[in-house]
Length: 393
Image (cartoon, rainbow, N blue to C red):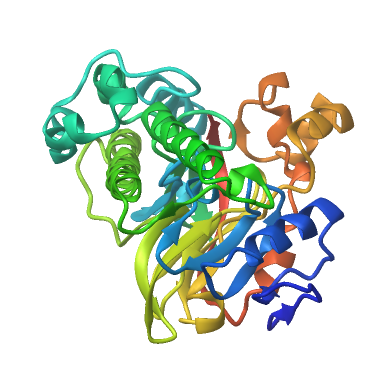
């Protein structure tokens, strides 16, 4: 489906790939962002767009000489990793529960961290620049080391999936853990203070921004890139452990070569060139989809997920959706659904089926097929996956 231009009286237009009308709060949020003086050309909304903080989740915002830390959000560098393995479905028979228990034992979830720090974590080059990060996080180096290679909570997950050819895929979703969250909060707080001092009349305090060329902008940009690298490496560390577990059960511990590897952010900002100009591009709940870029668009627990290749659509700033997108809040999901619903909706998936993951029930998310239909001009599907094991954060 091509985009439609929303009927909003804003200085910059808003292009939407969603096939549903925005609720009043969502419309207000889109208008607020499109009214900022430094927004470039237009704002793009992905098919899974929904309410966020400051900016909508599922929005792509290009800016000239400014960046909005709350638009990037607090889970800096959150994203997905997936590998296609040489294994096939038959090899998994009778082993799913043991694989799940091994994953849960090897990869900390929720607020947990690793008890021991492994060599690849100690040797990560990012530690060399830790002292240059914001003073507000300097006491967190030990915690950041222990959390490198841990999943986190909320909608983060680890899954064993099968594609339509019965090939086994490993997939996970995670970000920059506590250190990324704290860096974001430190800088959001600075941006809000600056806005107050300058008496900036912002449509929303969460749209406080830094101006390029200032020390505050430079400090945020440096910390942002560090946290994005941490998030990417966090996924690499977990994937290596995850792969070793599956190899132990399916190949007697013999290492195998992935047939395809993908690791992509969906909460981040980068310098990119669009419409012939260099801009700061923020993807808040969106994946880069330049021509030949591989991306991952997961459905909810119990639904399909997709490995995609970008089509380089310039109107979307070469972006696509980052998932199904929530249909209802966590609290609403807990009130609406029962444990019986969870058991029913996750039938055939080896996963926890308790109160702790009820807010992640598939029914709380938009139908993934609908989301995919709305972005056929943004990506092509390379593989369709269905999970058989799911470990939630």
